[in-house]
Image (spheres, one colour):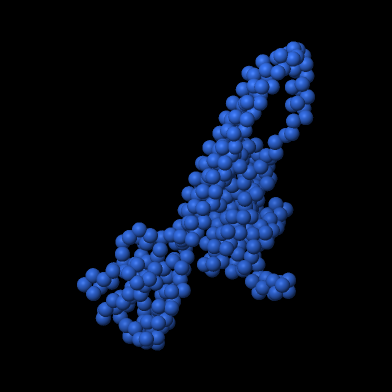
Length: 388
């Protein structure tokens, strides 16, 4: 009896650890793919912003003197200061002029005309703008950007490798522990059979009852990228992701809007999951949606102004009224609070606080279900200086 019980527990434990290892490996691959995709999207946003800066600088320098020493040096210095734009080509009726961050990396010359290279690592999207330089007709500027941020990619791959190695280490030590415990269990069982009779059924049941009563309970927590209850991000992940998106938007001087919505009715899990899926379909990015308490959803909208966020919230509120049957009681019980970066250097904790305050106002005001927190930029800067 003792040998069969120990063997069964070992097999169950091994199966559980194997499942955990598989989840670790899949989670590592999924988070790697998601982070790589976000890095590429971030690179595209930075490239657009940098190309606009280069075009503005070219127009300013060209107005003072096109292709003179000052213009050439200005373009070289401007291009060297950028992270993503690899090369630019300026075309005029009198000729074509190319500037590269690294010679021969992004431009080739064909019949004395510069062409962007079609190679791995360069974006297949060329950026284009006209250059209305006085006295110069039909001048244009085009640019090409690097597709990858190699520093960010190496960091993501390194961290993914560490997660996978952690899974391998867990599997290795589990196998080693099973081998050691298996040997000890066999020897111990043989001694019991020789020196003492097997305990009665009543004694075994009593022992098992006591063991189950005093066994430590497992504490639940976030596991994986998405909550199994809603299939969107865990509430605990909101702050870290919002801080990351705020940093990305501030580096490109773009706006960001945070939406926190909450259903006032007591929804069951199936209804809440349905509402969360509708939010994913509407806002088009599962990675930027998170649970907010039991009945709420947080939406992060990078590169989005507060006015656009309000418009989206109104449309989503209307969609909820149309999608859910009246029997759900959802026609007037969705409250929404918003706040945005609005040109401020603000952290996630402060932005969440502002959106929550707007949500409280929306919940307490029977006349409106959507309230936006609008900051006074000058007062905010005075507040930061005073606080500093």
